[in-house]
Length: 326
Ligand SMILES: C[S@@+](CC[C@H](N)C(=O)[O-])C[C@H]1O[C@@H](n2cnc3c(N)ncnc32)[C@H](O)[C@@H]1O
Image 1 (cartoon, helix red, strand yellow):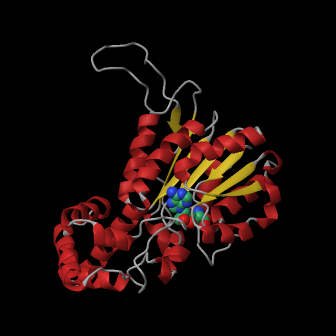
Image 2 (cartoon, helix red, strand yellow; image 1 turned 45 degrees about the vertical axis):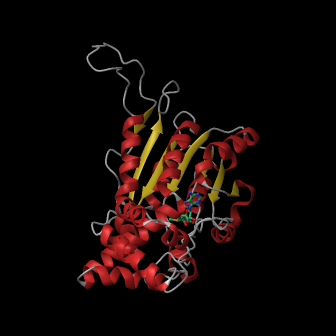
C-alpha cells in the first residue's frame, strides 16, 4: 500500500511496468516518501524477483528518508536508504554493486520537490504559504533562497529569473527586488517576495503565473537542479548494466528538454564528421529509447492528483555494451 499522506507519486503503473522487468539493483535517486520505491519492490516481490534484487533509495532530505524508512519497512534488507545527492549516483552505485554483485537494472529520477516539502511553510518553497525564504532540499545545504535574493546583483537576479523561470518580466522583477532591498533591507520571507512580484505584474492571473516562475527559478538556483540533473543523467546511464533502464519524470520544460536531448544523443549512432560518407557508423548507439514520446498522466490521474498534470516520463534502455555515454 503506497503511503500518500506525505506525497502521492505520479505515473506509478507506467514506472513499474517499464522498469521492474528483471532482477538486480534498482536505484531510486529521488526517494521522497518512498511511493515509487514501494511500488517497484512490490512488483518485484509479486513476480518472484525480490530475492535477487535490491533497491537503493537516495534522498538529500532527512525528513524524506524518515518517511520512506516507514513506507519500506516490510521489505527489510531489500531496501537500502542513502542520504545523499543523486549527482553522486556513480559513487553510490559503485559501492552497492561491489557489495551485492548484482547488475544495475533500473534507475528512477522523479525530479523536483515532494508535496510534503511544498506544503511545509518552514521550507519556503511555496508562494502560497508565508515562511522563511529557504528552499534548500538538502537538509545540510549552505545557500538559501534569501541568500541569493539579497546577495546577487540586479543583472544576475534577472538572469536567474529568466533562465530558470522563463519569466519575460525578469528585468522588471529583479529591479523591484533590488529597489525594495535598498529601501527596506534584506528580503527574508516568501510573502515579501510575493508582494514584490505582485507589484510588478498586472492581472491576478498573470501574477500567479509569474509567482510560480520566480519561485521555480530560485528553487532551481538554490539546489543547482539543472547541474545535478546533467551529471546524474550521464553517470546514471554509464552505471547501467546491459538491458538496464533509466526512467526520468520531469515537471517543467527546462528539465524535460535536457532529458529528451540527452536520451536522443545516447540513442544515435556515431557517423563521424559530416560528409565522410561512411557505410557503417564509427560506433553504434549504446542505448535505445523505450518511450518514443514522453508518457503523461491520463485525465483520471490528473483529477486525483493535480501534480500529475505536468509530469512527463521518458525511459531509455542500455542495448549495447560497446556504446558509451557522452
Ligand atoms: C518528487 S519527490 C519524489 C517522490 C517519490 N518518487 C515518491 O514516490 O514519494 C522528489 C524528492 O527527491 C529529492 N531530491 C530532489 N533532488 C535531489 C537530488 N539532487 N538528490 C537527492 N534527492 C533529491 C527531494 O528531496 C524529494 O524528496
